[in-house]
Image (cartoon, rainbow, N blue to C red):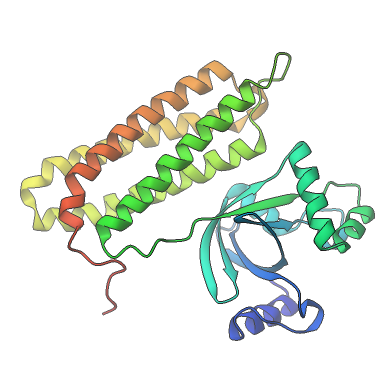
Length: 288
């Protein structure tokens, strides 16, 4: 839960399009909303940030305390987060940096905000550096465009997961067959987004469309069956990630390849069937 101080900062931030006074006056501040690792409830936290290309960097300093802040534990379990920056709000993927990359990014943060070096000096734990990769919506005008936008994101994340896994396993002989935190977080975010997307289709989109297109009942049944197959593969992939230190490269590659092939075929088929039907439906839906 945010403290009363955090609540006052959040209220001032939202009332003034990101501008606040007090200790944050003149600084770069964002609001990060995470999903509770155990509670599942959303929590919003004001955080300083540093820009890094098209991404944002935040540090789990917790003012140099001995433990990581709660928002960091939350994003490890739920990497999809919401960011408020000025007057803008967007979804993002939270990826903690590791090893040498973390050290380089931390130095970049310290150059902009030297106070983080003081926080690091107060504690023996390594302050996490988290990269927030924005996933800003493209302003698509129809539900067909929104479906295609989600599918494009899923395909891109799948390619990136595959590339990171290959780079990790090809790092050199003698390396332990483990999956890095970075790969685990991207896999987790990908699986969570895919599950949310398919649940929405099965519970809302497909039943509504079937009532208007009864001749496509068999098609919707097939798509729902494909969702169940992909969910099963996701479960097997998650099981491999449960003990990342013992993950077998060959088995993980095989599971990822199988999931990639089935998901790609499913997305292609779904687009061929649904895009023509959704092309005339406006997005976002009109308010009643």
